[in-house]
Image 1 (spheres, helix red, strand yellow):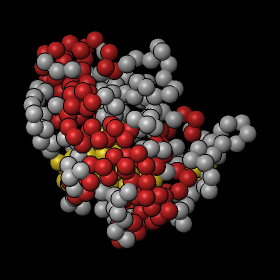
Image 2 (image 1 turned 180 degrees about the vertical axis):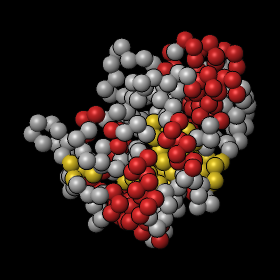
Image 3 (image 1 turned 30 degrees about the horizontal axis):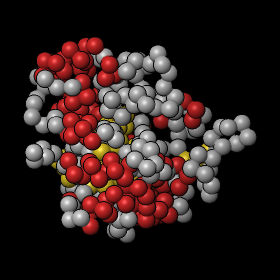
Amino acid sequence: MSSPKVPTLKMNNGKEIPMFGLGTWKSAAGEVNKTVQDAIDVGYRHIDCALAYSNEHEVGAAIETKIKQGIVKREDLFVTSKLWNTHHRSDLVIQGCKQSLKDLKLDYLDLYLVHWPMAFKEDGDLFPRNENGDIIFSDVDYLDTWKEMEKLVSLGLVKTIGLSNFNSQQIQRVLDNCTIKPAMLQVETHPYWNQTKLVDFCKSKGIAVTAYSPFGSPDRPWAKPEDPKLLDDIKLGELAKKYGKSPAQLVLRWLIQRGIVTIPKTVNKNRLAENLNIFDFTLSDEDMTYLYTFTRPEGRALHLSWNNQHKYFPFHIEF
């Protein structure tokens, strides 16, 4: 069976990004290599990575294998990575990027994002902690970080730069002080947390949006047993039956029809193929609107409340 044709989205610099890709957060050591190879085999061409996931070396080995096998060429793939919080300082941005390139065995990244607006203490662990177990912050201004991100483009290390987990005020501050405009914002987006205001804001500024954790990240480490699980939602299941699709496929289709890039994570080969099989049906306008009503006040799964004392913590404002 041939792989479905994945549509692309043109970003504000003219580059195109596949609207569907593979997320690799929480893909465990020892399994992500096989997952990435399986994903490429079933038709994925967009791989979303980050230094902080601590698995880019395995992703890189998988990409290298598929290129050597002649399954894909480098230019067939769209690879995203992210600058981690410990590399915000001006002298560390290029180092952070080059570390990801080395691990991924690539000469350039298609998209490189500032993972969070918050900087952490440099020159140590990815998650530096004090004796009480609290994250140690750094006060680097993300505007200084962005200036260095712009240099990565001129150096040819990255094609496109953007942001992740920034709120609208922080995005506007970057826009007011940048030479290269952010082309992408990556944020948590799903029916329980639809981010309508933030998505509309980004669209008004010509910034594309990628949805991470499109299923609400049910396997997040801090999830409680009583937390609602999006894919178990009875209303979602009933709507999925109407279309002869799974709840996961319905959610992914809803995001795609909103014009949002989506990067679901799975390590199951059958689910990899199932998640990709969302381009043969269309949700009605009525059902699109209905899915917006699923939003919940407590719907954000990745609240990162343990960082809420950071001066650039992004989730203190509504969007």
